[in-house]
Length: 150
Image 1 (cartoon, rainbow, N blue to C red):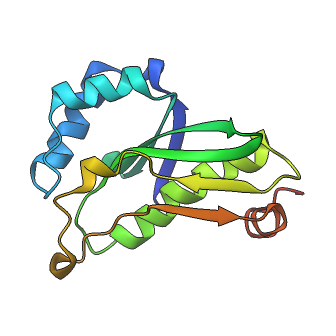
Image 2: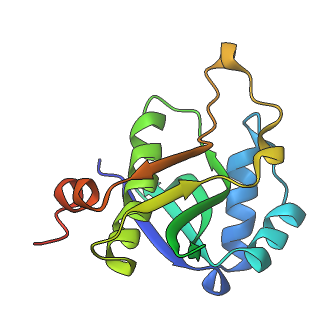
């Protein structure tokens, strides 16, 4: 089945979705609870959710901003369910956020960052946990990979 990804404004995030996100985290190492996730809804602008057959597989809070004039995708709290498809889910979430960056900042390089590293302290390399700290995407790379000109 295909992974469906949606990015929307955090103000459109329902309490039921927050509970679903907490349920997704409960079985994994992150353990984010409803209270923490509710606070993230207030602190972030966008939420990207990845689903397969309606089941939540992963999510990431984010925002698109300019920092010192440089367009940026800033990742906040995120969690990907531990399944055989977790790499594909992470790529789908990141891809949708990069696509939004291309739309928001056409013809500009975009800086990608995760300023909330404290949330990821419990990562364990032996379990293959990952943290994306920051990255840089050139406008032409985003355009060619995401087909922004189409």
